[in-house]
Image 1 (cartoon, one colour):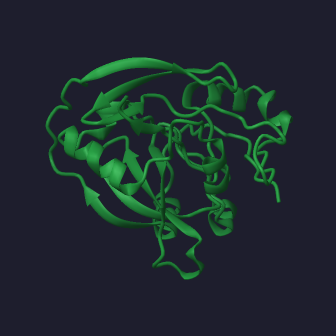
Image 2: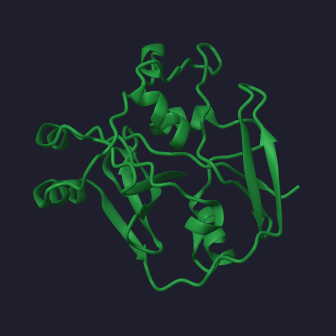
Image 3: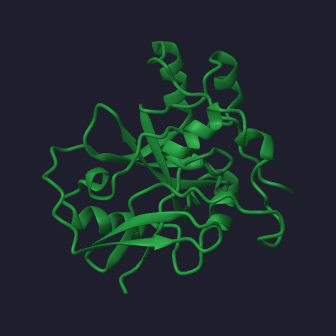
Amino acid sequence: MKTTFIKTRMVNSLFVPACLFIFFSVFSACSNNDDELGSAPAPIQTGTWTDTRDGQTYDWVQYGDQQWTTENLRHQPKEGEVVPDTTPVSSRYYDDGVARKYYDVFGFLYNYEAAENAIPTGWRLPTQADWDKLAANTNGNITDAINLQLGGLYTTNEVFQQLHDVSYYSYIYGYYWTADDDVTKTGANSAFCRKITYNKTGYEKMSITKTNYLSVRLVRDAR
């Protein structure tokens, strides 16, 4: 079964309270780290890394014994690249102008299956423990430390889509996958993520259905 990307629409305004109420009811925040934060310390080391699969180059920073990319993943797996095949996108979505502009700024949005299959050799999809270690090493200021972006998400919740036509939250929220399932949810079809918001410091630990489309950051052990 193929995994699919959905065409991007950019958000032009904040949404009516009714939309926000339904949106927040779709996802459950497990905890909120929104206390006043200190400045993120300077990284121990910085560098660049080039993805040999597509030639995309990413900056990275090191905190503690971890190296994190400071840009969202932009890799589009090609058909047959992974087994079983989970090619995530039809080529027409890349040539419509709007989507291309989004991807150039924010990288791709992946559902959980596509995110797992898009990770390059030598890196990993961050676990909850990885994210927590980053927070511990950066005074909780993970957004500034690794330049997290407000790239929104695409939600597959049909009720919300029917209520409001715009399903992306660019410049309002940023959602980032973790590698950890939320086994407390029925059917184990949810995973944890990290959420940032444009008018808040800190971040939220959340659980979200794997069929939604979020951003991806890469982490590896320092080398």
